[in-house]
Length: 232
Image (tube, rainbow, N blue to C red; front, side, top):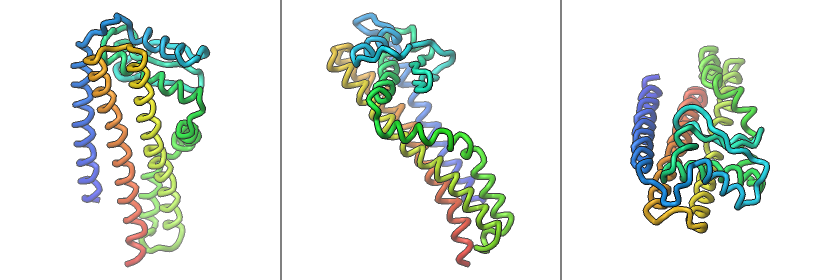
């Protein structure tokens, strides 16, 4: 267990460093005002219109960095700071979330796979570690009996969460690429504004990368506890 806590600590430290850098980047680029004077909401509405998407609504949502696209009700949800502000950071976030709406409209394969996993992961992710621990307590390390299969079931649950994390990576990177391409091709931002938008989205993507690596490391650790012990 000590090794697991060390692993958790290392992942938490890296995650904190990336998140802190992301916040600093957004604060920095929030000071780079857009020459076109458009708000995040206006940026989002134009990107949707330019892609022929007319059934997605852009709405404001409370909080900071709470921006997301909801495929169920087809809404681009922008945090208040993004929805109303007229800067490079707001443009980047608004365009990125619209990138997900474009993926949805174009039936992007990775988004379909992630959406299919959402119901499973929402149920299993919170209990997977406890199921593995329960199996180990029931004697999974011996490699036989109910404890072993309980632990294996927990690993399968954990595997779905890990798979979800890795499928999320191409979805997020692709949304950012779509956003940046549109901002550049439509001359929505100046060269300086584009550089700020690109840097902000790069650091946002790294939060998902750290999460995926953390999920894989946790899965490998617990798999070693279950299968490694059964070989002794």
